[in-house]
Length: 194
Image 1 (cartoon, rainbow, N blue to C red):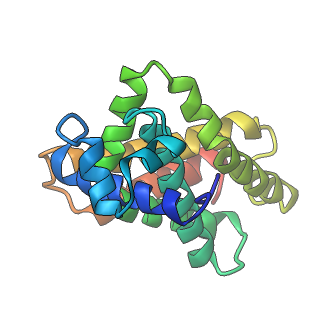
Image 2 (image 1 turned 180 degrees about the horizontal axis):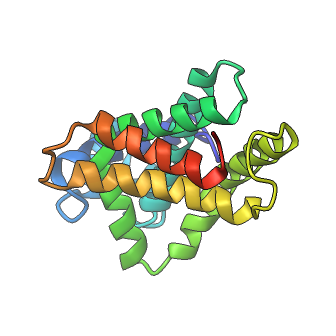
């Protein structure tokens, strides 16, 4: 997960996230972004060949922020139950905060036919979760006969998808804490945590 390349790159991403959140991708112009970022239009093109090229960079930036928040909340805890609880809480919190930008990223990847880029962006996150699962297996905290590679992807995708569906639907007649508790119970049962 790449952190910003430099100050101008960071300014472009921050401005793009803010403006796209307000206006949507189609109604956002590069002129809007550079004005908000306080840079020259030509500078934008040094970093991005087009407006659509922002989408993977925004997704990578958002995932980096999420991953940092998760690590900050864990404060050195590495047991599987703590990791799952923080992963669920932070995913729901982050999805609520950035729901419009997350939807933009999905649609941008679909429009640009670059969904394979999504897997590349997520690779470090999946690998981190694989490590958590390997440690949990070695600690006899979860089932030993799981495929950690696939299980890591399934857990992350399941939690994110649940949070995204909750915050992007109009059916919020159930509190997010109930959703979070249920997804946590589901993950624990699937991993054989008592």
